[in-house]
Image 1 (cartoon, rainbow, N blue to C red):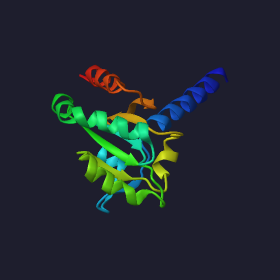
Image 2 (image 1 turned 90 degrees about the vertical axis):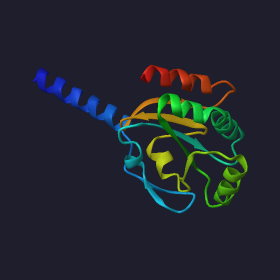
Image 3 (image 1 turned 90 degrees about the horizontal axis):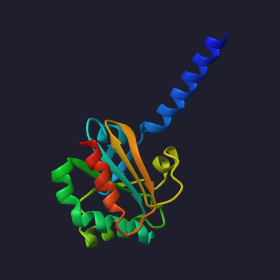
Length: 159
C-alpha cells in the first residue's frame, strides 16, 4: 500500500512539473496575419518569449534594451526572441506602428485574447520565458535597467 501511494504521489508530482514546464499547443497570429504554432516555434532550439504590451513602459524599455544587443546575442547564443503582444482589441492597432517606429527585428506575435498568457499563468508584463527544446528553463517578471545582463548570464549557462 505504501509503495502504491508513493508511486501515485511521484506520478502526480511529475505530472505537475511537466505541465508547468511544457508549452501549450496554441496558435497565434503574427503582425502580418499568418498563423504560427507555439509548439513548432520552440522545437530543437532556444526561444525567448517576451510578453509585452504597447501601454507598458517597462515592456518597451526592456525590448529596446534587448534590441540594442539582439544581433550580437543571436550570433553568440543562437536563439530567437519572440515578442508576444498581449494588447487587446482596443490597443492591438498600436502594435504594428510601434514596431515599425522602433525597428525591432524580432518575431512579433499577437495574443489579443490572452489565451497563451492565461495558459502559462502569467499575471503581469513584462514577462520573459526562456524555452530550450520545448521546456521552460527560466522565467522572469518585471524589468529594471540592466536586467538584460541576467538574460546574458542565463544564455551562458546553456553553453
